[in-house]
Image (cartoon, rainbow, N blue to C red; front, side, top):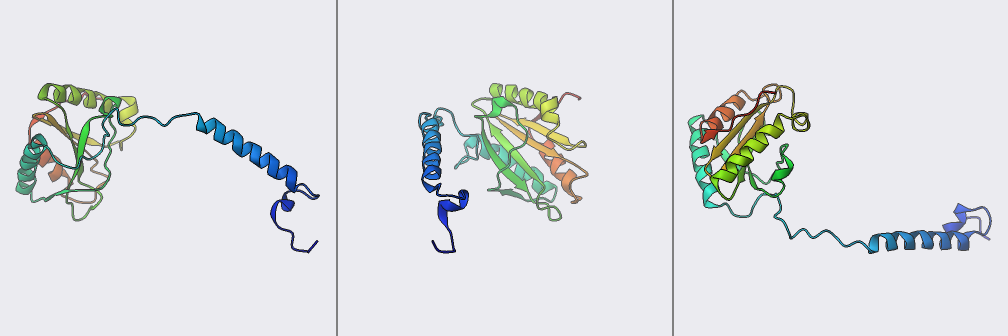
Length: 193
């Protein structure tokens, strides 16, 4: 045989290519059989909790109020394709949400907030209480920096959520985003942790 040995012979010192190939085939067959019997989860049964392609009238109304408040504070509102997913309770898994961005020139990674939409104001109020309780609970709290501050507002059937950290953002306008967002709608009380 030639000096340059290749293929399965490298796995064994003697002629074990046949045994190695059979063992590999059996292992692969076993894996395929184990995976082949499972059917993929049906994801069409519940809505995806991602940014929606079109903005509803309720979200447009909320955005108009937020845009006015941000402009009054010298800030610009932008839509974003950035995937924003703050800590949320399990009950928010199917809630429609839209991420937006208040432009912070010194902190391009900051100023992101989420608008959640519910079928009606009563469900939005329930969702607001659930989110407020979650972000101050142990599992929710550990997902934020220690000095985090929250803006959680209800505007009709929508919630506006903006977690922000004074120490994490180098932009001096970061508190202005919080103040602008906090001037819209009604406050959702956040329990003291």
